[in-house]
Image (cartoon, rainbow, N blue to C red; front, top):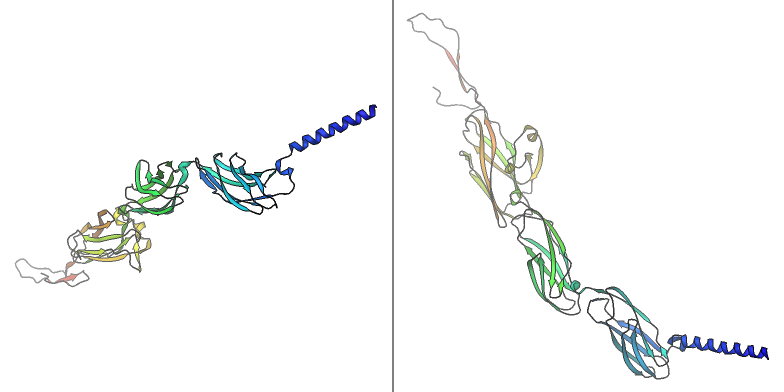
Length: 399
C-alpha cells in the first residue's frame, strides 16, 4: 500500500515538471518545423537622433498551410501586424524602429504567427547626433601662399541625413565664408572656398558646416602666408674692379622670382646717375631656363652686408641676368642705388637696394726728370723731362 502511494506521488511530480517545462519553452521550440522564413532586405546603417529607421523584410510561408496572426517584430519592442499569409506566399513589409540608443545598435528582427515564430535576423546600425548630419572635408588646399594672392581651398560638404536641409553655410568663428543653401538627402557638393583675408605667417581656420539643425564638428585648415616682398630676390653676379676714374665699371645682377608666386610688372631701375642702361622691364618674367652663377650674398633686397666670406661662396640661381655700366665713377667708395618693383596679386612691392663700389686713386700721368742739370744764375738752361702714362689706356690733350 505504501509503495503504491509513493509511486503515485512520483508520477504526479513528473507530470508537473513536464508541464512546467512545456510552458517555459520559447514559441519557436513549440514547433520543430519552421513554417515562416524571414530575410532582411534593406535598412540604413546610419541614422541621426530622432529619425525612424526603416527595416524592409521579406517573409515567406514555406508550409503547406495558411498562417494566421502574422506579426513583424523587433527586439526593441516595435511591431507591425501583417495578418494572414497564404500557403507558399511571399510578402515584403517595412518596420520602423524608434527605440534605439546613441552609438552602435544591435537589433533582432523576426515574425510571429499562430503557434510559431520565424528565425531571428540581427541588424547593426549607428545613431549619431543630428548636428553631425552635415559633414565637411578638405579635398585639396595649398600649404602656403604669397601675400596678396587669393587662397583657394577645395572642400566637399555632404548631407548624410535622409531628409533635405536648408541654410547650410561654411563659417570660421562668426564669419560666414561660403553660403551653400539647401542640400537634398544624401547630396554632396564640391566647392571652392576663396579666402582673401589673412595675416603673414601661419594661419589657422576652424571651418564649421552650420545648418538649420546645428553644426558639424570644426575642421582645422592651416596654411602659411609668405611675405610678398620675399617673392623676388636680387643677387650680385659680378663687379669688375676699377683702378682709375675714367675706367668703366661693369655690374651684373641676377633677378630671381618665385615661379609659383605669379609675379607681374617686374621692373628694375638704376637710381644713380651715370648708369647705363637706366633699367629693365621684365614684365611677367619669372626665370630663365639656364643657370647662372651668383655671389651667395643674402638677396640685395634684404640689405645684407657684402663680407669677404660671403663673396667667396658661389651658388647656382635660376634667374634673369642683367648687366649695367657706370661711366666715370668718382674716386673713393660709393653706393650704386637701384629700385625694383613688381605686382603680386593685390600687393604692389617697391624696394631699393645698393651695391658698394670703390675706385682707387692711383697716379695716371707722371713727369720724370731725365738727368740732373746744373745751371749758372742768369743763364738759360734746357731741362729734359719724361712723361709717363701709368693708365692701361691712352690719354689725349696732355699739357
